Length: 548
Image: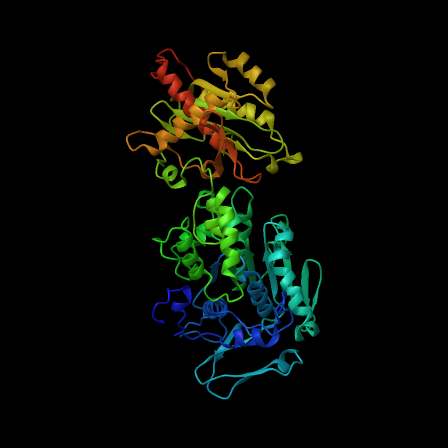
């Protein structure tokens, strides 16, 4: 390191392992820069791109010919890098290599072996001579590949647009034909292709793919169902001995994203690249922020740090967490997060709640968009999502799971009736909007002392109730616990605070796709429990009779 120079992520780029060097050489020989002032010029991989490429194609020293994914040191890779470092063009280059490049391990070179493009249908004349003991590569035979994103527009902008531009201006134009949402291989048996897929393309998730590019995985959550889609892809890859690559900006830790789960996994066969400047550097300090940018943008010579710094400075005024994630490459919670996800997770106690237990319920209903949920809490402070029916389904209903995209109101009514009979329900706090008729019927059926219309739109009351639950989760000396319901945890993480007059707030969604309904029912259930205790009704009535 030069004297006086600050360290950077590139200082760790030392390759001391066997890898398919033929792959980055093939990429630079075939692929042009897809856009910008240098569009059409030969691609030269940035240091970080080369580092991630050789690691993704790192070969096990004892690999044998015939192995596919198991020949490689890493089963899949994750690249977390800030805005505009070149993740998209690099992802497109890797995808094209997987389509027609020498990415399959084909044994160890004895000396004198040569990879020739002409042997694989490419007339460019390029060849690569292997060194003795070097791992060799060959193309897949008619590979099926998928490029996954939350929307087709996202994949087009981030990856597929670059891929099409590379094909158009390269020798690969004779090997591939590009369409609006797929690229087909013209050689071989004609079955090889790469498809753009989203969560709506579930019928294609069972295809026998050999490579998956998963774009912006920091946005994949259980709420938008992208985690299940990405995991389905990986199951398909396992069956075909294929591998995957995910790229993303730093994620919001309150959202429990697919990217966060990959980063937290204990699996050792995942390559992770996530450059992060020393934590002692403060992002809200201009001079230290420049050092952070210099560190995380190392190896991306096209990036103007002055322009990045100016944009980050303006974004800091309104959304400092977003600026730090997108430009500082740091994992920080979004602005206005209501309740820390780790604090909520620390309160898990998966205990059984027996029949006849005195409980309270919280209810928040929707019709065709948000979830409808019932949440319960015992009067000793344990909160849980009850189950109902012969399938013991949780009392959280996603309208997207039902015909017509509507919540099954009769099923919700039957579930509540079952809970009323199973437990000693002393109070139900129900938010009436969209469910006024049903709530009126519940008041008539179970009594006005048990079913209380509790409007969450009341700012003073809702702020106090949300603060009470938040305080009891965060304070060390409270006995509050919960069942660890994953969907409720997701909704807790999605909840943001929206300021209201008088230093108060209400809860809002982080985005339209990220629901918070189970978080609202948690607030209602806890408020009902605390009010019940304050009213002296914590002890079970001796005359109460319940039926199975």
